[in-house]
Length: 158
Image 1 (cartoon, rainbow, N blue to C red):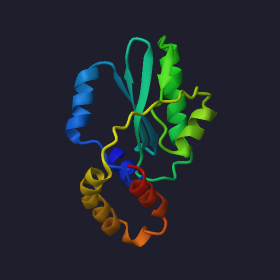
Image 2: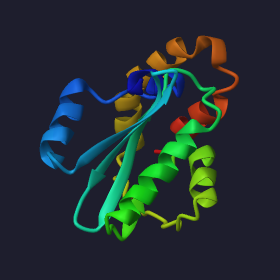
Image 3: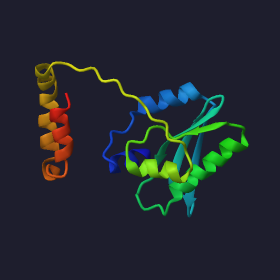
Image 4: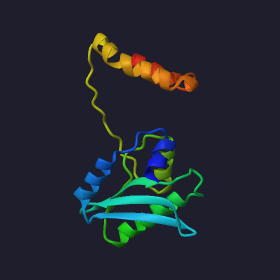
């Protein structure tokens, strides 16, 4: 379900080794919430816990149309964390406006993050990004016009 969710959003899914290592780090401080429909899993949500924080991560579903069951999973997980004395709930970084609006509806506090980016010479960047740029052009051939802003940002943002 997790892999289907990543695939639907066009994002590379974490490897099996990454998921297993995460479970081995958190050991018994992990919960998996599963929403069922007719005894079939509809949405899953993994939560990892530290001393004061519940990290809600890796939501998965086979299809997009879950009638907002994923939001219900978030609600149940947050209530469970509050019931068990956790002070904070963390949904991670917001890479999309949809995730940011979900956090706003759940009354999460936005915390701006700073990004450090090391800059290299134009020629070094050109050499390093040429292969990925060509690969991107080939991969997104059907959607070149729709992704023109992303390509332009990659070209001028060095």
